[in-house]
Figure 1: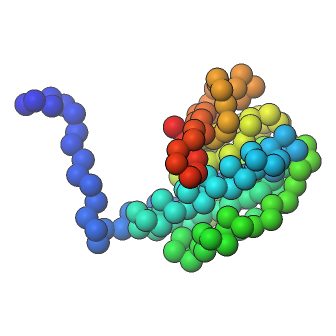
Figure 2: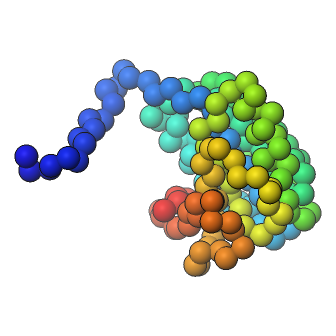
Length: 170
């Protein structure tokens, strides 16, 4: 009675595994995201992967480094196989212009075989956008002071914020 129509959700048991079809993560490696911003994006991607591992989430994960084209692509069918220490030490590729279109095009090919739960794109938000709105949630995570006015309204903006050693998104 106290909570009315509010659903109460219990935390998962230790032995329960959460199955999510596919998560896509893109890291903007364009010139405007080089240096410290790129390192912050890499640290945040590592934190996302660590969170998935710690919560025993079974999912396919695609990770792309991209500027105006996809520079590097990785696919993990088992998230527990990702070495997070090595992941954060990687040398990223790119540093050219920015186009978000290649990632959305790549996801179109994936959705023919799998269900994509979401796209998490670590970016400053400046670049070329696709004409079509996808049928999965899109989150842009970046160092925004305010909402970036060039990002279309169908994309949810999440802001990086400083916490302890690494970043987390709000």
